[in-house]
Amino acid sequence: MAKKKKLREGYTTGSSATAAAMAALHFLMTNDTLTAIEIPTPRAGRITIPIHWVRPEGKLSARACVIKDGGDDPDATHKAEIHAVVELLPAQEDEISLKGGQGVGRVTLPGLPVPPGDPAINPAPREQLREGLKEVLSVHQTHVGLSVTVEVPEGEEIAKHTMNPRLGIVGGISILGTRGTVKPFSHESYEASIAEGLNVAKHQGHTTVALSTGGRTERLLLKDRPDIPELASVQIADFYSFALRSAAEHGFTEIVVGCFFGKLVKMAQGFPYTHAKDNRIDFSLLADWCAEHGIPEKLHAELKAANTARHALELLHGQPALPKILASITRRALSVAQDFAGPGVSLSYRVYDFDGTLLCALSAEDNA
Image 1 (cartoon, helix red, strand yellow):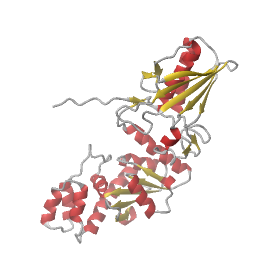
Image 2 (cartoon, rainbow, N blue to C red):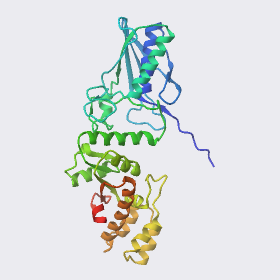
Image 3 (cartoon, rainbow, N blue to C red):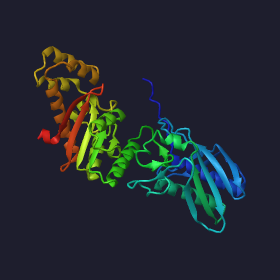
Image 4 (tube, rainbow, N blue to C red):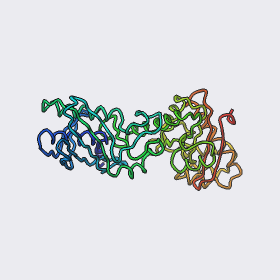
């Protein structure tokens, strides 16, 4: 058996900005252009990051560039240029001012780790930047103030492919990283984005939130429920139990779940996380659920041997019992969802066919 290749970690936009800022400050202290620099991280020890280039900007300022590397789990910011411009402020001893320049977003809504009006540089990267710059000053035994501006030349365009517009972050990307490195296919980062979306929606005063498993189900759900604004809709991917629990903890009184048939079956099976790699549909169980509504024996056998959820649904199409089958599976999913969310939350489902047709709309009240 071939040995499984270890996935390569990358580094965050926060670490990229820190490395660029430290390299620019080192240049101002020594006139030496580094090709790599060791930096502190919030939770991953010390790492070394390549420096793309360093150049002077003026008598007391310099700019450095790092190419952000997402490792084996690249996101929209992979290969982006992250710049830091560092200016010496001799009259402001030991003060470090952080700014967001071109391509760094600005926060406009409450509910995020950074208050409205500030650049979208999260608390952990802010502290990381300050710590790294203080290291360089300490090495050179220099007491001087610094003005640091983080820029991402393509940031405004990159941000269109992130959650920033939804979260009310305008003009560019966020500088992120609670760890400092990017763990490939980490659940932590996606869960953090779900929590941020819920937090923003709550701070806008919404009491109802839509949780959809992807962009397509989100569009279908919001079309069916025009009373729910886009800001009160969060894409949860496979993080079913986490999203339900978090939505309840945020105080939402109504949760609407939108999904396709395959995710519905997994949710009804009780999986807290619905990714295919970890949790597969039990087609024998699905066939037995359908048999409770009087399907033919031949169909029962075909369902047990189905290859995919799409295949199973195609087999069920045209069956008189299909509406009852869908309602029954949705009730099972609602029961599981209620366990994850806890009491005091009104839950409902909207289940779609793969062509976008609404298959079932059911609430916990209908389930009672």
